[in-house]
Length: 241
Image (cartoon, rainbow, N blue to C red):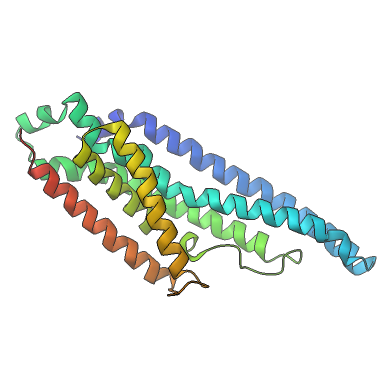
């Protein structure tokens, strides 16, 4: 079943791998460019006493940083869209689930094995990406040109990104099991977690109404992830063969 799951979702896995490599490449390149620009600005400010000369560059880099941070926020949403939504719904459309069930595999085992085959690599990839984000943010937001580490939300640091990725994956799995249509499930797997992410992020970040630590934010998403995984199991068990 594990090999079958890998083969069935190999295109989605490859797409996520390419996105992961693209994000890492952008962070490595921009970190070097930002570092060089920061050194040049420090020289102009300290040696030539012209601090205003770097204001335009600082504004331009800050806008680019914030745009890229928004892009990083989409990574867990893409996991739910690309591999979460088709996890069950594609099986129903192609009727390949009946083959596994006819061989004595229970529905719960069928779903859990398929889910874990994709969830574990997704969680590992997210954790590795978060380490690169931490390195990138430390070098970008702690240089003299910006002078602060205020540009990275709590949702992109520590354990929170892994929990968000699992939430998006499990929500995509559940909505796919409910709708049994890949296209419709993909739309829901993108929009609804994006809305939930926006609401939770707005209220739990440092300047939000209920500021939480990384573990507090991760706890919210892990609870939601567990709920939607349980709902997915319940939905699959209630299907008619």
